[in-house]
Length: 186
Image (cartoon, rainbow, N blue to C red; front, side):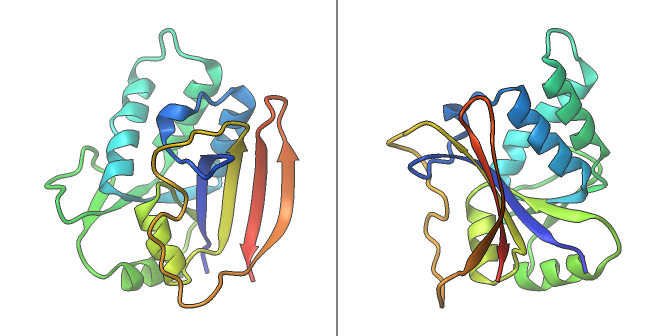
């Protein structure tokens, strides 16, 4: 069975607003390696529209880009499919993207049964719903040494039936002061 991995940058106060971060090369390498071990992305509309067309466009034009960003764009481009859960998105930006309007729970269970690599998800809304449904197997947070004081928060609006118990299985401190934390669902 494939694993669903929630991966995201966050501030010390749980902020997930991508404009608050400027990931360094070590952080980008971390996310690049995670992406290389996956073949499917799960997004909501907002996160999808942040990622696409940004990374595919960067693949087309590397000029002036950092080496770490190019490596991530290549890993992103190698992903076989992107699943977007949206009621409002009319059509995908990319041919490997599929828009799903049906039951999130059933769709994820089907994806987990397919052959393949890991399934990555990011953002706030879809991962919060997946956590509520108990469908996330692994949580990967990169905590930046920043207090944002505003913006969307990690697990904003989550409504758990019972406490989500996680086990820390790995931690890594980057030169920048960021800390990568890897938790498994117990």
